[in-house]
Length: 432
Image (cartoon, rainbow, N blue to C red):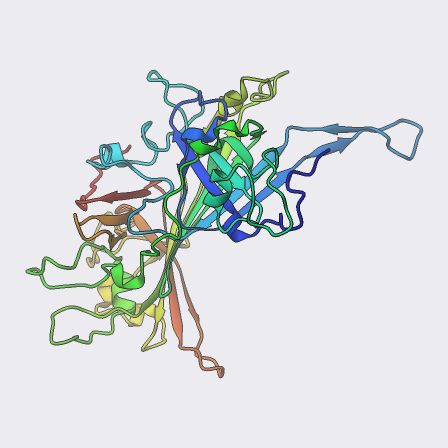
């Protein structure tokens, strides 16, 4: 077996790898041909884990087991990236779909979907081909390795047209298993985990010019904390107020301090974390490992069903000016969150309310994107969130501030992430 990169300076480091993505809501793909995939910018780390489950077969009368039976392998991929203002989310709702609650919902067939079997429009769960390419570190960057057919940059080495400058691996029809956004004082991190059962080593390197990489280095114009619209304003303001925070977060972290004599609140929020987990049920297809036949790899998710409701959680962590039980901190005891059957539920501020068990907290996080034309990055978790726990930490002898964390969840599978020039008010008119 020939080692792909066999020169002294052929190690791989961060500047020598890149990720390309192709997404679809159909089952059939392009048989793993990655040349039409899109470069994923802002990637900070890539992790791949291969799991090959096996059973050791019992050999009657012998204490040493000789035979092993392998099951269908599982490959997990983890991508972590920062978001550039000129780019987009990994999973997103398109502008055409971001019109109302129904069209924007996660389970809509044009968004993430709910099952691997084709519907009447041949739509299936959204799936991704993830292609990772590697070049040796004798090149200054990944694009140098793609565009060079021979190398004259390393002293003592003669040009060799047959020398391999690129390794390309495509992971086929991947399904998302989790998405996490960490919004902090140091910026935004997007972490995506995917799973698949098929990979393809791309051995045709005659089409390497088909990989299109934007000019490097990238501009680094990433989303930062100052781009987020988390400020409460008066009713006449048009500059702020697009984000919608739950009552508890506005009350607990409100510093109530005017800035430059402007009429808005300063919130002590230090970080926001949004987590979405996708679990699946794979129906047994007796006698057939879907996706294991050559040329039919795209069938691997055919009998896969998304388990509902999708787990959507959000937490707010911020600096405290008063560390005390939260229900005494609210402006009105009538507005306190009630504990019913160990679930924090609705509080209308009316002691005689008949629907006080209904979850009603709206969570929408908005950040400013490009300045011309103006657009917004939007995380909309709907209006049916509820508080699950309150945590206090910090204030220790090491000098840390006392901080509080409010944790929320929703059982509506409400998770809309999009980039748009308009921030919609997505209101449900009934069950999805």
